[in-house]
Image 1: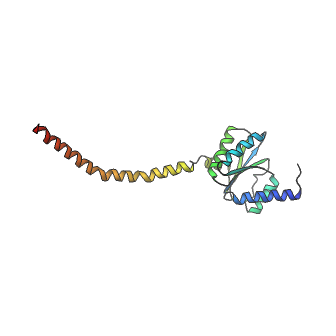
Image 2 (image 1 turned 90 degrees about the vertical axis):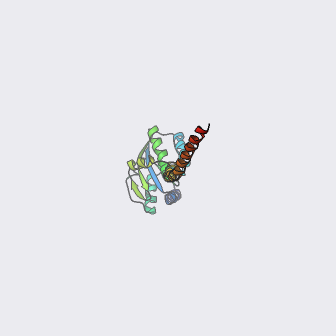
Image 3 (image 1 turned 120 degrees about the vertical axis):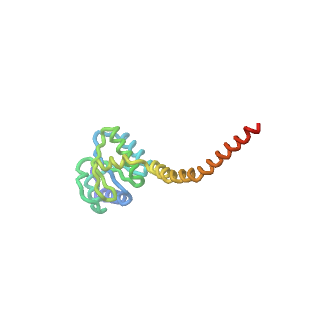
Amino acid sequence: MAFTKEEKKALVGQYERLLKDSHAIFVMSYSKMSMANVNAVRSAAREFGGEIHVVKNTLMKIALKNAGYVDSDLFNESSVVGFALGDVPGLAKVLNKTIKEESFFALKGGYLEKELMEPKQIVMLAELPSREQVRAQLLALINTPATKLVRTIKEPARGLAAVLKAYSEKQAAPAA
């Protein structure tokens, strides 16, 4: 399908806006995929504030150059780009899961805050714990010393109460 000059300018502008709003972009190659496959990945990406676009390589290269990204050879074959507008590790998890389950996508690389990333770095990012898991771990880490402090402070009083109880039971036994 041929695009007019105006349509190409509009696409480059759209790509530039997405690049400006994204914290990270993930580039994948694709082959033999259906629209159902793409739509499934797109809906999963939306849950984490991401967008998935099948891009025109030449126009994407122009947008990358205009946005100040480092030049790379990521856009040399058919490309699908995941734009992380929200949760970066969340989108990386979605794409990594899709790549493991389906054979029509393959990671080529990406950018994190305009820094070039290798596919293995994206996989490492995808394997990080979720934000909720990190919050729970942090809360447990903060809560543990406080719990131990309360137990330590409470222990002498509990020990004294046990001694008093044992003494009172000892005094009550001969009187009976």
